[in-house]
Image 1 (cartoon, rainbow, N blue to C red):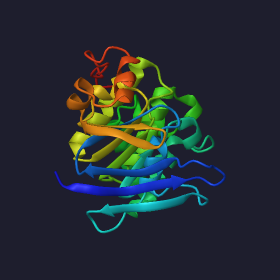
Image 2 (cartoon, rainbow, N blue to C red; image 1 turned 90 degrees about the vertical axis):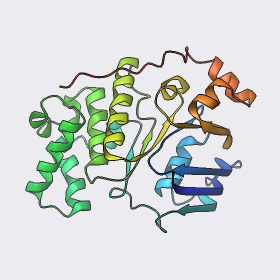
Image 3 (cartoon, rainbow, N blue to C red; image 1 turned 30 degrees about the vertical axis):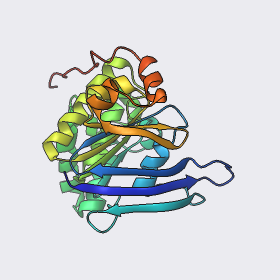
Image 4 (cartoon, rainbow, N blue to C red; image 1 turned 180 degrees about the vertical axis):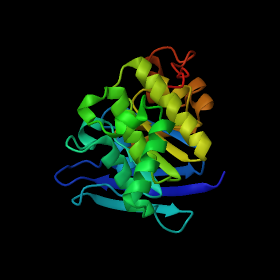
Length: 260
């Protein structure tokens, strides 16, 4: 596989914090792969996602390099889609679902509103929102948590990016809905031949989904490699402990969702 992004010695220090949130991270992201970034809260995995997407706060001090195969970082919204952890905070409560999803198509694809709404309807169907025509007119509070997360995924994908980052996109959902969302993401990225960076604290959820995993602890990359190799024969004690603390990895909780 082609290296999409080569990260070298990446460190991030937030204003007012003595310790780096990321410390000299070296990691390759391969084009077309599903890479899971796994770690406990505070491990630096979300900081890595935001650094890659160019979404770090202005006070953050960043050192190191990110070399992109295209010669420049992907444009957020157009070439890079980002799904945040909590759709309740990433979706605007006073705008309809149609307005919010269509805005991405209008802004990044230059479509007029009528065509942008048609694109929004198409992507809502693709993420398996029940009654997508009705959902276009609904407000976020009228949808369930799982449906709101599907809308957030739709908004991230409406401009047809080639790289998707999902930052703890399943953490606020119950286990069944988590599995549905992961299965959905897997189908979407495979269909569009996208690269996916999947941020999670749940090593079991990633075990049946990711091509490769990268384990983070206290801002450091502990180990990385093909999922089966790392999870069946972890080199580092921290990875062994992380695996032991989670539910059985031999039966990953992935299910196929029936079409709506």
